[in-house]
Amino acid sequence: MKSTETVVKVENLRKTYNADAVAVHAVDGISLSIEKGEFTAIVGPSGCGKTTLLNMIGGLDRPTSGDVYVQEVSIGSLSEGDLIDFRLKHIGFVFQAYNLLPVLSAEENTSFIMQLQGKSKEERSQRARQLLKNVGLEGREGDKPAQLSGGQQQRVAVARALASKPNFIIADEPTANLDSHSTSNLLDIMARLNEEEQMTFVFATHDQRVIDKAKRVITLEDGKVITDEIRS
Ligand SMILES: Nc1ncnc2c1ncn2[C@@H]1O[C@H](COP(=O)(O)OP(=O)(O)OP(=O)(O)O)[C@@H](O)[C@H]1O
Image 1 (cartoon, protein in one colour):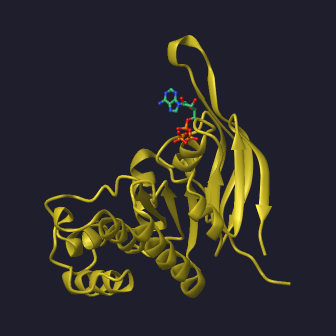
Image 2 (tube, rainbow, N blue to C red):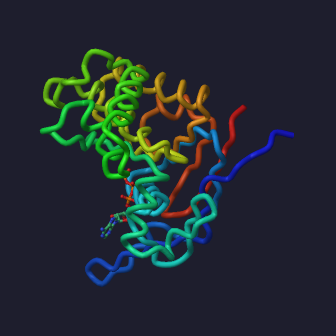
């Protein structure tokens, strides 16, 4: 039997918003595990809780109750400062809007997290260049985001997410702003990183092209998991 390594475990997770005095159960009692090497899509209609779930898994938002374990650390029990350090080391993020720093070059955007981690200039530069090469951006290291297409910017965001050698990458609607050519290029890169380096990806997506590539599809409705399908 294939051995598995759990990278994320979610236990009875809930997030309730009380906007306008009406309780919205954005995530309503979800328990699941993500294993190393998964390529998982979280899907479901708008408002079903995908982003809220991902934000709690990534430690960007705190649950109302329940817990998230990353590499067996209960991230809910970390102080704000420790959580920031933990995220930097263990979790990579790719967002719909790329979120690159406009004044920094592709290489500087990629190496920024390593700078926060105190890595030497030489190590940062070497790794950033290698990562940009891996996402097909050799020769564009000095370009600022405005000089790159949306697809190229998103590939810088993937390189940046990989920079800290995270345990997994969370990608919230990463293809929402991309044309079909850039989407297929980005998906091929992420699938290759998944196959060759066992990098674990968790997507929130509406995009059928992402869903078609996923090895596991978790469907949410009203903050609950309604199906969890592993594909062979
Ligand atoms: N900060 C907030 N304050 C109040 N309600 C919120 C907040 N964030 C999310 N919600 C509500 O929680 C529910 C889940 O939202 P969420 O953004 O997680 O859904 P989603 O599945 O990611 O949607 P989409 O596919 O449109 O991005 C929605 O009803 C939303 O209105």
